[in-house]
Image (cartoon, rainbow, N blue to C red; front, top):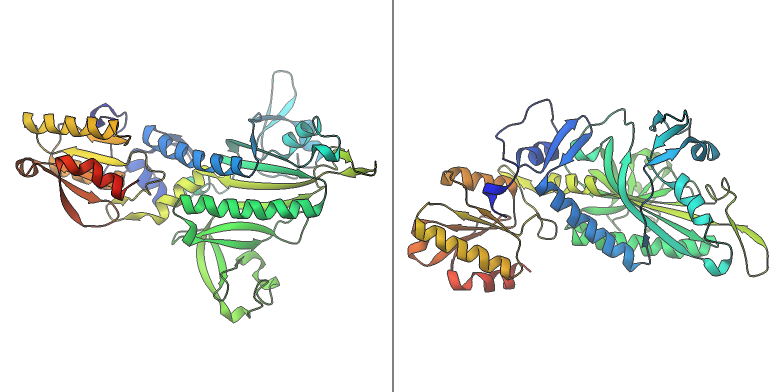
Length: 418
């Protein structure tokens, strides 16, 4: 992509009262645009990041047997009434159609997926099944703030599992837990992310969250220094000792964190409401047992920015960066431009995603913009490096600068980036 063709431009500062670090940096760097509180447009750079996060999650969900579908965002009132959540779910966006029927925008999809899967499961031979989607969610959030971390519209992956009994649910629950940590590892967040006990369990006493440490995190968690199990502040008064290693509470350390994922054992909470059952091996009718597993993709994007930045801008991990390489031509010297074009073509033909800054801007503007946008590798061709038949290579994650001969650039990236 030639930067002169890119829709967006960087900004030194942004309008309005946006205070969250992730939103400020993403807006300034041209990844997102704020339409209104809690609602953002994903611009070309931002959409590429979101798509890469999505693909990582999709690959891991498929790996554990997930089958992807796409459910409607517009959901009928009667489904919510069956589960007593039309009035009980206080974050629903509600509306009325020309048919005078009432609807809600999908805040979560148990009310849709349960009757859907019921149409296809009748016997224990049909179980288990794992169904997921990646879709916008809508919540009438009274405190929409913190940029992408707490929005009124946001992109989410929700997986629902259907089982014949609690034992089968428990087995899959552990598979999802391991799968989520694989996702966080690929995103570069595993070392900051903790398995956390939380409230909200429908079928069991607790639900579980994946909490990622961040200075600006909205949640407070307590981490057992002995085994790294964590507890959300909202339940910590109930905890007398660590559930895993039995360490006393004086071994817990307090930390700020962002909830980047959560999983719940739903039991028959929703299957009972929709009379969703199956015939077991003995010919007996039994309730389906369910689990629910969520990851907020837009929240992940905001979290990545919150934990990967410096005073100059964003520092994207290679796995989700919109482009792997930022190529800067710092002169309009015809020979230099020709060499820059050659390197751009060579890199793209070698499979690299390259943002080529071919704009007629000063070197200072180009270098500052590169730091703000935060691609993993910056390659600079200047009049000085041209004389040395080299490019100046710098990784965004450190301050080391190397001179790499033109003919060795691809090999260097192959050895150090992929």
